[in-house]
Amino acid sequence: MKRWSGIIAEYKEFLPINQNTPIITLQEGNTPLIEACNISEKLLNNKIKVYLKLEGCNPTGSFKDRGMTLAISKAKESDAKVVICASTGNTSASAAAYSARAGLACVVLIPNGAIALGKLAQALIHGAKVIAIEGSFDDALKMVQLLASQYPITIVNSSNIFRIEGQKTAAYEIVDALGTAPDYHFIPVGNAGNITAYWKGYMDYFNLKQCSSLPKMCGFQAAQSAPIVEKKIIEHPETIATAIKIGNPFSWKSAEHARDASGGIIESVTDEEILYAYEMLAQLEGVFCEPASAASVAGVIKKNKENYFRSECNVVCTLTGQGLKDPDRAVMRVSKPIVLKPELNSIIKVLNL
Ligand code: F0G
Image 1 (cartoon, helix red, strand yellow):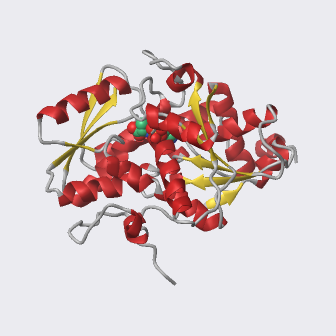
Image 2: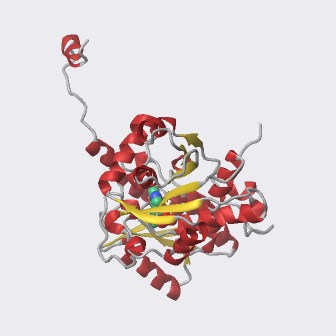
Image 3: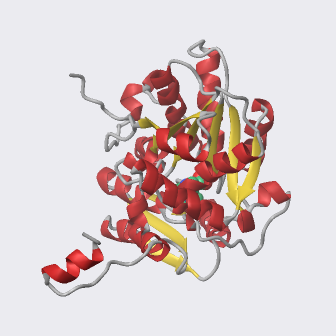
């Protein structure tokens, strides 16, 4: 059996590397693409086939690892000593892990008190210098850009083109798995790098005749953090989906391009719609993703109600991150454990046996 060696080794002919690029990998990629039969049957009248791309199965629990393996490898190749990013949590977790492996110093700026605890734990345990900014992600990103313009520090946010290049490999995997491109691709949108990356990946494969069609790219922002939908910067974004709580996305223009060139949409879903999809994924499909990830499936449920889909089509939803990063949210959402004394009778009573 062939051993998977990470996205750079597997897709090197599509990536900007050379013989001198040291490959820093945790064997990211090759994530499952599973069919969501129960959601399709129970929530979508079996009208469409839905596949879930489980990016939470990457080594640090999110899709960021695909871009980070390349960004950190290229930083190492160019003899960088320090990398930096602003983050709502997942980028910082991934940057910290890959930097640790590469022997690079890593600085992360996060919005104070606004990232999930699991992600903070990851950045800290991997030895990054974590600075919590009293402000938003957008404020933190501004600081990162100023710092990197004045000091020899490499930015590993998605403004770093190697991040987008690495992340596009998820689209290759989907086409490789399905044998064709899906009709629609649904994806959460925050800083808008990932929708940009997928579109690039699909276009690469299309131009190389690896697929003969292209999906409509359908991005979803959280309702009160939806600058692209509202066509204006949101100064104080709000949402329980902290990963996509972003008011001024860096890749705004290229996300609009992906939408328009593919004939897709960028719309919003409310926190309640996100949490409903989050719970349904867990309870109908056995998939525990983080709230922001569920925005893609919330989008499918919403658009199905509006009769957006032609029948017999297929849809891929990217589930961007692992639910365990934010367990507080899950515990808040559902009923608490029933506490009982170690007595058989009381247990039997509760179970209605
Ligand atoms: N889902 C999750 C779980 C994320 O962490 C992010 C972004 C997104 C979706 C949106 O992807 O930014 O490419 O549009 N997280 C970044 C971070 C901003 O800092 O971890 P995007």
